[in-house]
Image (cartoon, protein in one colour):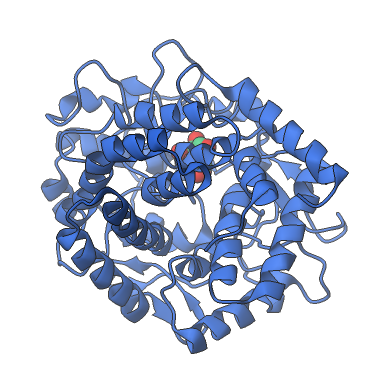
Amino acid sequence: MRDRAEADLLERAKAVLASNWCGSYTKPAPRLYPHQWNWDSGFVAIGYAHYAPEKARSELEHLFRAQWRNGMLPHIQFNPESEGYFPGPDLWRTDLSPDLPPGIQTSGISNPPVHAFAALRVHEVRGDEATKEWLRALFPGIVASHRYFYARRDPGGEGLAYIRHPWEAGTDNSPAYDGALSRIDLTGVTLPSYERVDLKIISQAQRPTQRDYDRYVLLIELYKRTGYDDAALSAECPFLVQDVLLNSILCRSNEALLEIAEILGEDSGEIREWEAQTRRALDAKLWDDETGLYTSFDLRAGRSLPAGSVSGFIPLFAGVPDAARARRVVERLDSPGFAGRSGETYRVPSYDLEAMDFDSAKYWRGPVWLNMDWMIYRGLRRYGFDEAAAKVRSDMVELVSRHGFHEYFGPFRRPERGSSGGLGSPGFSWTAALSIDLLRGPDGR
Ligand code: 9WN
């Protein structure tokens, strides 16, 4: 902790988590997201590790109750007592799947598998017997969730899992997906009528468009028709993307699982194979040499998606690039597209500022998200880019000190250039939790 101001910030971050705590898990935001989200809970557990280990443990225990029989960890576990989110269980109808666990309502897609590195971080911070026993109990579920990606989402056996919905990567309306989504033809399609509850809470300027939502809903209709059958969806789903963010996180979590297996004295043969294969495939297939950034691959079109998303920096967090390639990635981070021409932006905008489809207010099309910053910070430290890491850290601290723990932030320091300040929901859990980790350290990889 550096000074008094940071100590105050820490207390304010804890207050955000306290008010979003739901008894066994933490909702991501007070009104906008009233259920439990998968990758949010991983990040949140990291924050609690520093001062409320029983909450850190409960967060992931509660999440894994919703794990499907095929190993998939759904992206939302619905709280039957909470209303006011679309799409809810009535649209998802995951009871049509034979894999849904009894008595639980969930969505029918997954999320980036952050849980192994999150659980390892909790163990690193605590280092006690209770945390080790908790790790032991979680281990089989986490392994099964990785196995699901390899068994059901990698039909070519490449070591790269595909997403079948933009919500699975969590970077929902990133311009990177526009081309792939535009192939979902809406003409003549009758969708169930629905109401965008999000727009009652947050301005349309900061949320995905109606057309985006129509496509999101159409994909769910397709899943229901197949009874959530992954083999059928591999053949039929118009949106199949080997996502660079999800696979980088899978890769970092494989690495963490190897460490966990070692701590627990568990067998790690299968994990070792996943780890090596995904690391190699990411570096070979998802590297874009022209732009010096990693990017996702559109399996339906058989080509790479445009490389301009913040997700392209996350391979650093997983230690994927060699030193020379890592230097190129950091050059890109310092380029006008991500750093601005005269330092007018906060690190790191979610999309290239100089791209036509950049939008400084609209969700994943430009604003800064702190979970991305946290992973990039740790990635830079891992490679010894300490100065670049320090810049990311000080921008994170400045953003939350000035504007509070928002869901995302306008990337500009001053409003003349575009959006500036806190955006989306205030009181956002992962922004608070990862700020706690950043402020409390100790820094690790
Ligand atoms: C859809 C909960 C989630 C995050 C995602 C973020 C947003 C949901 C939405 O909120 O997505 O899953 O309704 O917009 O994009 O990353 O996990 O915080």
